[in-house]
Image 1 (cartoon, rainbow, N blue to C red):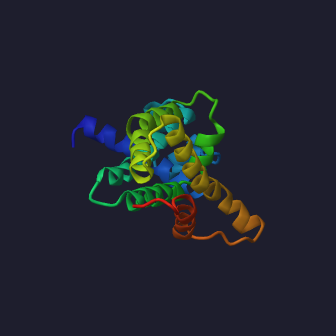
Image 2 (image 1 turned 90 degrees about the vertical axis):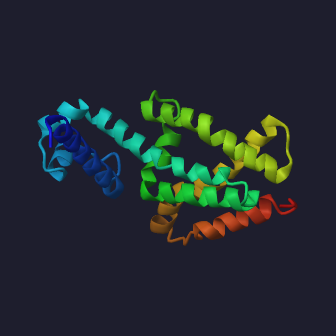
Length: 198
């Protein structure tokens, strides 16, 4: 293995440790020392490859967000009815979010904060995601007005993201059993698209 490969392998090892730590402990618990320990490297190496905790978190979030890319590909498969396509997309999207529960709240709560990964995610949604989702809703409903399509998309996302954000609180603090993702999506689609012919 040459020097460049070894450096890349070390950087990936640190990033992988950060991702695993975030998955188990969340973003706020991340420290350079903890990631160095978990990756069996040292603080100097973490700083060398990432420069700061913020840069490490930013790169980790970029990796997590890239996991969303595959979820959008289902929207391209026009052999699947639009309602099934949209439902599968939302299900897959929520599955990625469930791996990193703090990610959604971080993206939403930090809406006005200059946050590189969030901005990149916004550009990604604009370039890849939003048009595909809007096109599928347009196909499903026949709606033509861009403003109404945007409002419909925001309502659908809100209907699935709010329960995803609230479920840990409701289940642990209020002892409320939140319905499964499948049940939530079925209810949403039954109510939202009940008179749509697919």
